[in-house]
Image (cartoon, rainbow, N blue to C red; front, side):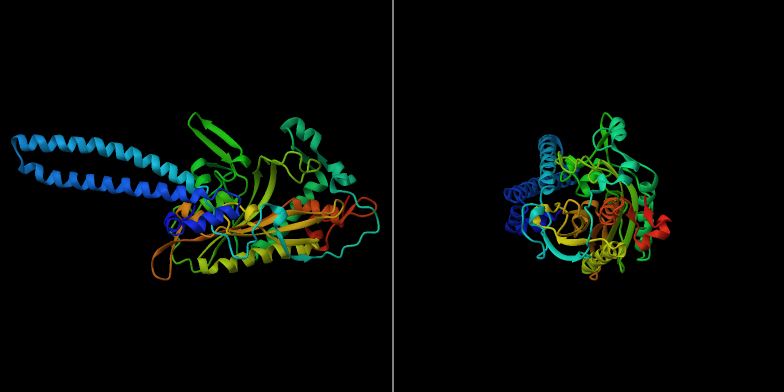
Length: 421
């Protein structure tokens, strides 16, 4: 979450940011109001506690009626203190609720807009692909129909359930091994992570309430719910919760490959054919913690890794600067990579590279020691390493006239064959 003291000093700045992101600007003023009321209650409590400390020192010297009157007065103060403690708890809860709705201040490179339609294309690669036959969407290819079974998946799981087997599952594994080798050569540490996290972690890291409609809730008992992870970003970042990272001379680079789960709430009717938008999928995630002055360097590193993966495969893809209305609260800057699906003439997101500045670390209390020797919150960054959306784009772009899929040269050693058939 954001720094409340910075909001109090710059309320108009945050109100303007809320407006840029299509949210109610009044939230900033309400958050400030709750904070100022909390400060007043805290001041009253401090006075009562000081008075009680002074009383404890004096009471031993009192006797008779003076002693009884002093004790009676302190009992009344105790009642007032209890009331103030309850009021403080209520105000802090309201303040946390308001702060969870306040986004980071976006980068000056971030375009102002309402939705993904306002994102700005900043670079494109391999756009000169030519085809001398009529292309089919990936889900109409014979190899797709042979190895992907959505009908059986729907019977056992429901809408957007699927089985993937044989050559296409083999293609997924080959792509992930290929991408992993590129990531690892850049000094990332690999993690195995939990697939369920508690509500506090999801709130501290910024997924609640921002992504509440996308998360699967798992009741553990009458008072406890967990959430299935939508990405390994959440368990990777929460690993560093409450940790002191020292001087953080070099960025901490971590990644994990996990099964992920998303409700795809709000996507009814979108991409119903095929497995582009599903509830369960494999995802490779890159994350980092660094000093603020290293943020841009790490952000660029993530971008270069993605570009190396997609360019090595020979994909037609592009980078888009994500606008204010399409970014989550945690991000102050985000670049998405989109691959071309030429049969339907659409570019679709296959990767998201974002910087959350100190938004996540503040919630998780992940700190480092800055150059002045003071405790400060680290910056966090997160980026998709790979999902099988890349494989779907590959199938559509590299299909042949006879219905097979030509495997990119760099992927053949991983896949073991020249064609998917």
